[in-house]
Length: 329
Ligand SMILES: O=C([C@@H]1CCCNC1)N1CCCCC1
Image (cartoon, rainbow, N blue to C red; front, side, top):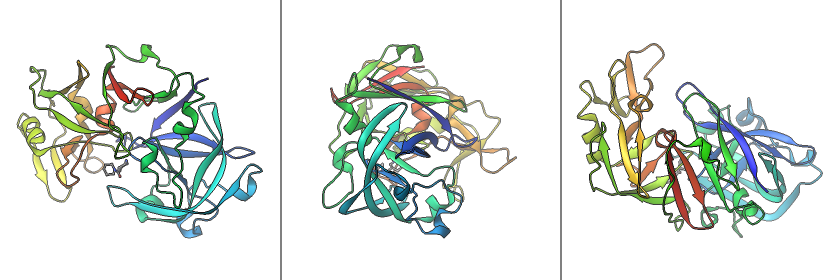
């Protein structure tokens, strides 16, 4: 068995990617942010304060004949960007891309932080990280993919995120036609709940890869490519107008600049992010100053290969072999 779901950028900056998920009986369709950097499936619901839920599609367990309250269970999560949410837990049927898990923990939000209140294009997150990262207490719950894995043709999924176009999350199979190059595999470290891996080196503008390894995570829920300052500086030293903008909390440059590419080695292959993907968006509508898709990870303490990097590749999240595959596209 397999599943295949389309995913779409939420806005002109590809800030996040929206994937529709069916929950309950009859189906309640919610737009969720699939997040390989976390392990909770949580939703805006009939239990979310009305003032917070305004503008969001919500899940009503009372309207689902297959919903069951998970007695005594609660959850609470705080993300790296200091956004947060918490609540109680139901189990219900959850279908993604035509594949159904009959009894999935659906975490209902009774509290959401302002970042989520304001982000009305999504109704929650679907975590695709490792189960160890799930926040439900007293007993951690499995992710949708973990519940699905044993029934899928192969215990893996792929992410094919695109700039301003429809992409896909495929479950149980690899559509190699989505890639231009071979898939390079490297071990994945799931001990922290994320998909951790090590790139063997990097280069700017098509130069030869150096041998400075970069350890980080593959995170579909993070917009940017966040790396160490020495890498960020090595890149922007090639961008004449680049400067750190305190108000923007990042490196900005003239939108007219022809940005160099950024490449990294992984699993014996090389992934090259075209400069065009690193020119993310004007800092404000109509501005000629643009915000960089590559920024510093110094404040976070972990390197994150977010959507800016993922858009350059077909990425295989292979749970069965505890490995990550990367192919140029
Ligand atoms: O909270 C996050 C991210 C936030 C954006 C969405 N993905 C999960 N973490 C990943 C990096 C280390 C800290 C935890």
